[in-house]
Image 1 (cartoon, rainbow, N blue to C red):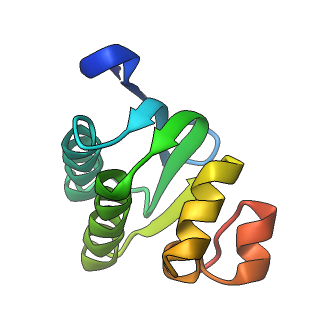
Image 2 (cartoon, rainbow, N blue to C red):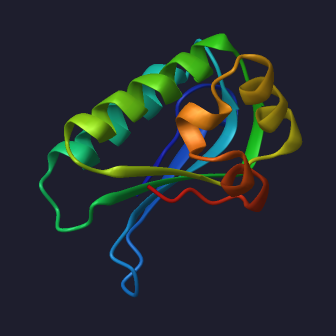
Length: 123
């Protein structure tokens, strides 16, 4: 499934058969205009009761992330914890990594600093 809101922003949801994890690929800018869409789609997956207990957000094609995008990630983390899921932020580009470091949210969203450097999260 692919959704296409403003200016090329898209979300592509993948359900890999081998892991059973839900993966949402974020394409374009995660900002004021698009953050609510990511939050809505992530929350739908977290609340469906699918057997997977892992939600992966793939940022391979993330162009930019502003404070609204960061707020969306924090809200998704809150939903993940509330529904007994683990959140993974995969393939974080350098600009997202810097935003998470500067705001002090890196460890909260990704686990340990070592996990953050590897691009994985273990909880």
